Length: 292
Image (cartoon, rainbow, N blue to C red):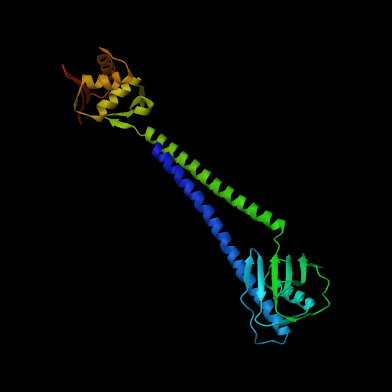
């Protein structure tokens, strides 16, 4: 029983760990999918910037995710960047890709990594960090980095969803355990209610009773233990020593004539069915016989 309990606890622990792994895996899959959508939108930004420069042949280099939620667009050629045009192109592609509306954009010169232009977009309100929106950036090699800023509400919502999901898993496990316990109790009750046929009697060892034609007779604990031993070995002689040991000596009590007294009591309670006999095998023990 202890082994079963430990095994069951390990089983549910594994289920819980597996659920957490699935949740984490799903989240990673979602993040990967979001990253791919973001890269597609950023490549479109790069292509539109090249077209704005009347450049239809140069390539946009592969978009890199240089940090978590931070991406870089690079070009194979020099180009002119008009700030207001950059803002419009990025906003349009981000809306098309349903990306976050909160992000930081930095245009850096390839040679010295200095920031040539940057701005923050926060809830569609543009804040110019470098006041040069009206001037074009000269034709040079540039990289554009976009860092998405996850708002606190989204982070809170994610944690809340995780907590709700974990609580649901725990609730499901507890519900299953409760139902399992209820089923076991019902099975135990059912087993207890299933009596053992004994001639015209039905023996209920758990209730310490026998029933004859719907009439119940109570048995003492010793009577019940003796009858259970006889039923296990019908039509077989059971030595006195064995009966005394199982019913009395194992409980720390040694008796003399008590066995004969309880046998006599059992005979009286079983007398309604004359097919049932508790026979005394002189000098040896007793035997339960049932005439079919």
